Image (cartoon, rainbow, N blue to C red):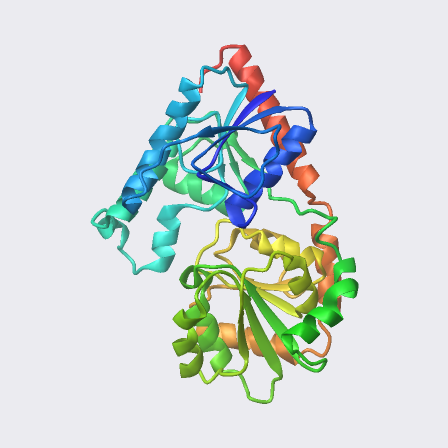
Length: 385
């Protein structure tokens, strides 16, 4: 098939949607498809078999950046003059054959981030207004044929807020790369990685992966950690692109000096999963969260919240833990104290490995190809979007 993938950036240096674009385009190439990428930025080396198309984007102002890519990407696809079997939007742009809702909904992020009633005022903020306008148009009849959501949480939110017919939905979680994320990494890298971090054998290492600390719940995490009994022996490592100086005042205010270590973005993140005893992804809101299945596949249990889509993978108290919200500081503190008081977290980690084992990246691409074939059949028989 000839497939168009639409995304703002193709990058080998980032996680999230950019990471998904890189591995999906590579997988589709290996399966014999002709793959065209409609992007604005390219970071790092590219496969010469991929065909890139430049999408103009106005970077002068955040709302213009959002709106210009959303409208320019489908225009560049049309101007290419190519007949695509599938036009797959991996970011907020319309129309498309398939919209992949991988980052969650702006409308729900605003609900979690701000006070009740904020949506009625969100249109006064140009950036929020632009995001909400594009998001609303993604789900207008005729702007999509099918929608892939990564979790049942996302599906329920779109059904509730935008009234999309349920038969247009496919829930397909992002799978993991079993060659990279597996329990053997724990045996291979754990001792050396902990030594480099200065973590002793009797300390439990907590790990947070990701940037945008406000959304990831850094303030609430520091508050909860600050209320733990001093008898508990732990260290926290934060791997991401957030400037440490942004969070040092919060660390100091909660008397966490010497316990929190800020790391740069880690290319070999599986080595940090191997070093950790517990991964924390207790975000205010997260459409999915690749970190959760990746960590679980490496044998590291995860503490997360109901507002994180990939919490679908976790059975509380069996292979991980789920908070009602990171804003509930007493609950957060109690959960951390309970986990850190456990002598051995390995049984939870082993069950986590078994839970995510079937969900490989090949499994994900198999499911996507099924949707691609469905779209091609609809188009060939004249069924309209």
